[in-house]
Image 1 (cartoon, rainbow, N blue to C red):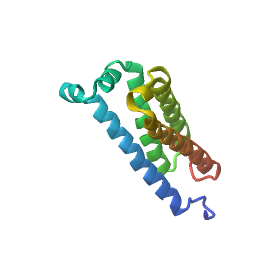
Image 2: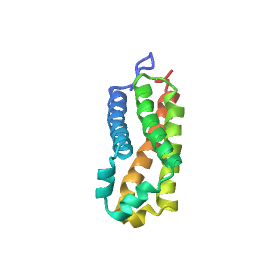
Image 3: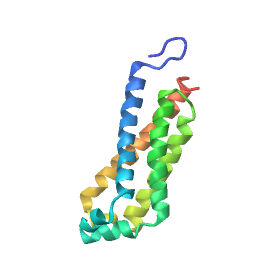
Image 4: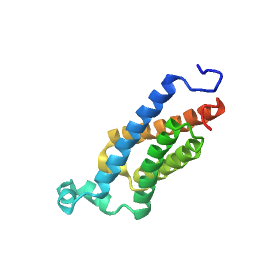
Length: 144
């Protein structure tokens, strides 16, 4: 429910806040991956180490954009700014590019196993949900 001033319900802030925490976990995962020491990399199973060593820089770049845009989109959502919509779209496009490379080109399923697709699917579904939620919030006048 909204009041006459287009104020979003309390659930809007809960959803945006939980989404921000989710996206900050993504930022942490990215930082952990790119700051992995040579010793940590060497300790990984051979297939996993090779996967990360051979990952093109553009994939690492879209990973960075995806997680940071997702977090920024959530901050913009909490600030009730309509810029959240295109920022979430950029994040989702980067997620799709990253996972397309990891699972369709680099055959990440062979490296990480069939069950490894659950996390990318969840990330993609949540990303798409945030695009839709922000678009709906904008249409309802909750974002300016």
